[in-house]
Image (cartoon, rainbow, N blue to C red; front, top):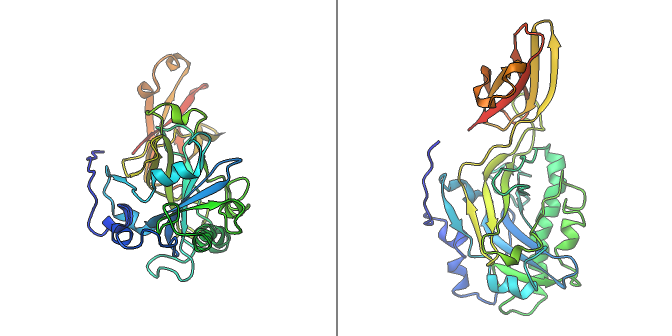
Length: 332
C-alpha cells in the first residue's frame, strides 16, 4: 500500500489540532474548556503533586486526515508538562473521548475513542473491542469525567501559564483531579476492558530517540449486522510522545499484529485453523511438512485466504498428509 508524507494542517483543523490558535490569541489565561466528544490527554506520575490535562480537540476531526499524515499537536505545552512533572520518566499518559449528552448527532451515542499503549513501538497494539451501548456508557461516563474534572478543577485555580483554555495542571489534592476518574489501574475505575495508560521508560528523558506510542481506536457501540458485539475497534492512527515534550498524531498504515493461532481442529482430511483477525486485513494460510520447517515461512505452500472482520475466523487445509505445520500470514 502506498502512502505519502504530508506535514501540513488541513482546512478546518488549524484551530483544533494546531493549538487552538483562535482561542489562545485572546484567552491565554482562560479556564480549561471541555465539551462532549473532545479528546483529552491526561498525564500523571506516581508520587507527583500534580496531574496535567490537555484538550486535543474533537475526536471526529481526526477522521479527516489522509493516510501518511503527521500532525503536531501544539495544545500539549512542553512548558506546562515540565511545570507539572520533575521529569518525563515513568510518566503515565492516556488519550480518550466519549460521545455523551449533549451528544454529536452525527455520531452514535456512547461512541468511545480510546488510545491503547503499544508494547513494541513499531507494532500496532491489539485493538480494543466494541461493546454494547450500556457497557460503553459506563466507561463513557468516566471518560467524560476526566474532561469535566479538568474544567472544574481549572475554574477553582488561578489563571496563568499552567491554567489555560487548552491545558491545566491540577494538584492531586484538588477535589477535581483526574486520577480519581482514571482509577488506580488505568481502566476508568473498572468500567473499561483494559489499562489505557502508556508508561514512559525509566530512561525516557535520557535519549532524544526515545518514543512512546499509543494507537487510537474508534469504538462504535451496539451490535454488528451479524449480531455480535465483541468486534475490533477501528484504527484511526497513533500518538507519539517524545522526550522533548512534543506530541504528534500519525495516520500512517499500521504494522499489523502477528496472527496468533487460537485453535487447530481435525476432521478426516480437513484441518481448521482459527485465529484472531483485524478488520480489513488479508490473511493467508501457509502449510508445510517436516522437511519444510527449515525454510522461511514465506516459502511454505499457500492455501486459502480471507479478509479479517475483527473477530476470530478460520481457514482450512485439506491435505491428507500425516504431519502438517501451519502458519497464518497477514498483509494490509
